[in-house]
Amino acid sequence: MTTSHAALPSIFEILKPAVGPSSSHTLGPMLAARAFVKEAAQPAAAMGAGARIRVTLYGSLALTGRGHLTDVAIAAGLAGYGPRELVGTTLAEVQERVRKAGRVSVGDRELLVDADRDVIFDAASRDLPHPNTMRFAVLDFEGNEALSETYVSVGGGRLAGGTFGPLVRNVAQRDRASAGAVVSACARQNIDLVEHVYRTEESEYGHPRSAVDAHLDEMWELMRSAIDRGLAAEGVLPGSLRLERRARALYARFLEQLPHFHVLSPEASLASIYAIAVAEENAAGGAVVTAPTCGSCGVVPAALRVVEEKMGLRPEQIRGALAVAGWIGAVIAADASISGAEVGCQGEIGAASAMAAGAVCHLLGGNVSDQVDRAAESALEHYLGLTCDPIDGLVQIPCIERNAAGAVSALNAASLAMISGGGDRVSFDVVVDAMRRTGLDLDSRYKETALGGLAATPDVGG
Image (cartoon, rainbow, N blue to C red; front, side, top):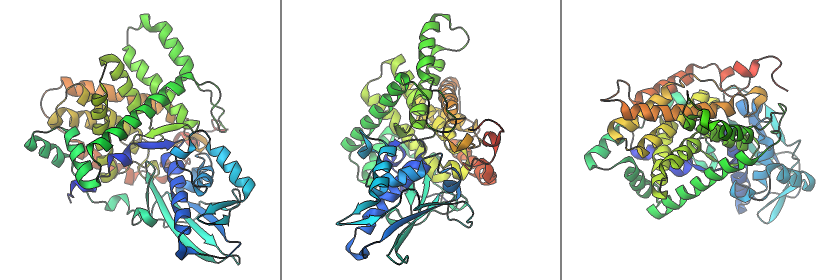
């Protein structure tokens, strides 16, 4: 079934400010918590003194939530924080303030919350609307529910439930949006994908061109900043693995060895280092951009930064590349999933590599009817079946190096698309559908539960 272009999420949802380490397990729960306290602040939700908040996490959120700082993010959300409000502080600092206060402000009153006791990890419940399901409730003085809401974190920090709309259906039941239809429409109207994105954002989501430009400029500045911070930082990443940050040392050795590169191009190695820098920032709980998720946030900025430095790109060219990347991510989110808990890492690193490949191909002058589609298709097809298996539930091993691989793969896919002649045998739409079906067939152990794959390797975790 083909739906209208409005079936795609806005690029504002695909590319947005975030705080690591996980968009679906950190950012999503934080935004859900903030939405819930706003709902609890409404006059109709009045409840007596002594009322408290309880949060129950299910499925993948329960299994890997501690490693992804889900409970810490929820405390921040209950205190009214989102990614922008966290500038100048950290999730841990906000959680500690909530822990000491034992309460959060909700409108003109306060609700009790024990940051340690009132977030419950329930990995046993089944028959969930989504692997990333969470339930918020306000309990009165006698322990009865005065208000409750269920949310699901559908990937990339996007939510369903409550004010965010009906709980998401299973990935097998989703309506289909056609990338091919958009490509054909662009050809008929003699416009490129960038112009299509501008028109759609304004007509479907009320975002004028000036707002789209401002948003894309902000996202690029955040991306560049994450690379720069990652290249400068040293020390150990938080969590049980005690993993050393290495982007700074890699960059220094790269500069030393630059005259001796013979096999791989310097750009490929530099893209890897940039991607690792961003992924380490994400793993440390730093500010990043979902592209389309936190776990895959290093791929797009790394690929675009390398091309920017190589070609001396202008701001409007970067905006165009990000618009193309956002559109590709939106197609994948609508037609399959960008949630590792739903389809595995193919929906994260695979999607990010496709986004970067299409964006770079656009920058190289690729046409929308063949080359951009081919670049995105080629990048994604090489990640079909990729498992989401974070060791100790942390977005570190293998996630950080997968960002590096995804960036290099994107550059290669864009290059191949530019030098290949004629149409491809397999379209981007076909590969996205194959990814969706593959995700359905993946055992839950390989979908962000940390129960299989590398996550089950003995003696690797902490």
